[in-house]
Image (cartoon, rainbow, N blue to C red; front, top):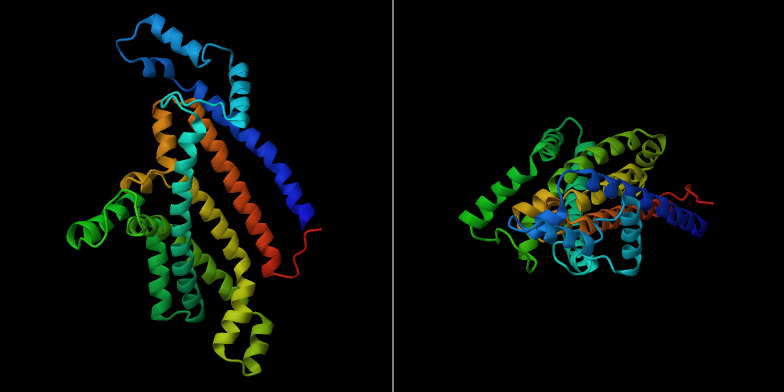
Length: 305
């Protein structure tokens, strides 16, 4: 297990280098000059040239890339927009996004797995049809529309929850529900499919023939063997929440890394965008590593030698 983890961590290095190269080239090849945006409309050519020199934008691309790598490792990377260390801009935002993603994945797993189990056990029943329909709606609904609907109901009419911003637990409820809805639908469909496949196996029939209670058969024998595909989906959905929460963060004015990346792209803040993408990619890879390690605990037959 230790050797497997070390190998996966070593593979993280080329992945992050590849992400950094792609992000760097895409940003620098895009139209627009960050020096002109920072200087303003009334700036002279000398002022713009001075800004380019100050932030190293007048140097060749390969020199700028190695300056970015150096700044990424020693913390000297400076935001063009905020004129402060990029780490000081990014880390509070990534923590906010992690908080939102953790709350959302809890909602998604709780709702999705319960709906999937009920749907699989009660096939072709009213509960199956209702849960399948709701799962399809959850996957299909646009995030911004669903967020506005919940704001209208719970913030405007009922006045139970705040419509946006960041504070205590009350501020987290609506964004977590909105961000977790689509993932709950995906998890419900995967859980249903996996459970239906496992419930057809001979050892489930044997367990029932021995007179074991239905609840014990479902949760001890069927669910544990059906968790492998579901855990894979949960890990992927959690990774998507880190990078794809920008709409939810915008609707609820949540100061997360998604909004930061979009605002930084519009401002041509190269260091913040590049560092944010590398950080999100690193977290995504670590989440997948955690999922792979969890496989061994769920299924003793899996060994990482």
